[in-house]
Image 1 (cartoon, helix red, strand yellow):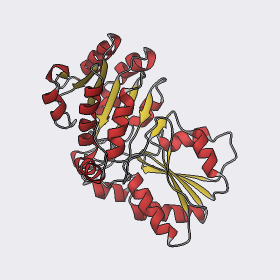
Image 2 (cartoon, rainbow, N blue to C red; image 1 turned 45 degrees about the vertical axis):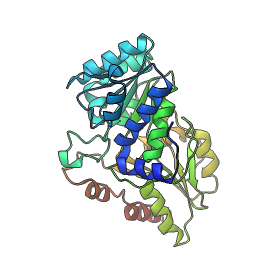
Image 3 (tube, one colour; image 1 turned 90 degrees about the vertical axis):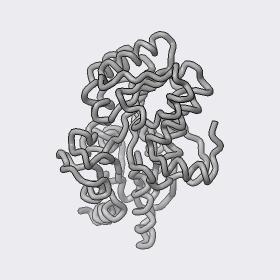
Image 4 (spheres, rainbow, N blue to C red; image 1 turned 90 degrees about the horizontal axis):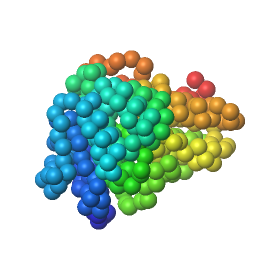
Length: 323
């Protein structure tokens, strides 16, 4: 297993989520001889170059055939292997939804489906490749655990954790190469348990994915104005850590969810559903607007959706004022 220190954390951040996933796959394969990798013509984009070279007999590139990829992975799982199947998140949730529903949801085969470049990270390719609906689709399918790590280190640890689960998993990877490190030192990644990143008295921010870095920067700027924010890394979107939310929402003036996903059906919807029968502060859902975005650079789309630090901070300030 990789030694976690400042240098490796910086490396994982520079590689981005796909590269960090690839490094994690090498280490899980060393620990678990049943681990195999299946991809739909995305060896390099999946970060699996090292895996393919080190474990060529355990690497399968099925070509541009995502539905077959999931069926092959399901067959492997049924025979006792531990398959990770990777493709673009938009294809994972849409093109192979029937296979995911049948093999992972209904049959509960422990396939680890990896959704690459989710959210706006390939925004220059246009809405056909941007994936802002995938969490909503996966949440609606029973028996699937959804994990959305915050940075390179979290992605590496999420890969290690997913490999140990005898469950169907959807691992959602967001952000670009060189994205900010949320975790500056080693930590315990526990599936289903949120991580408290900072504490404050006024607002509870519940976030998932690489936009957590922006949520933390927004919290920094709000602190200068006397607004204290507690920030939770809700890396497991399903099952949701409801106990953690309930513990930290007491005495808060506002709850804000932040995600690089549609405001319909994602983390925000999960929180609203979980708290529907609870007494809670007002809840504001921040995410991608309910429309298909135009093609543009990642940072431009993030800012346009109000998911950059300034946009998140402004939304929280307006929420506190009741607007």
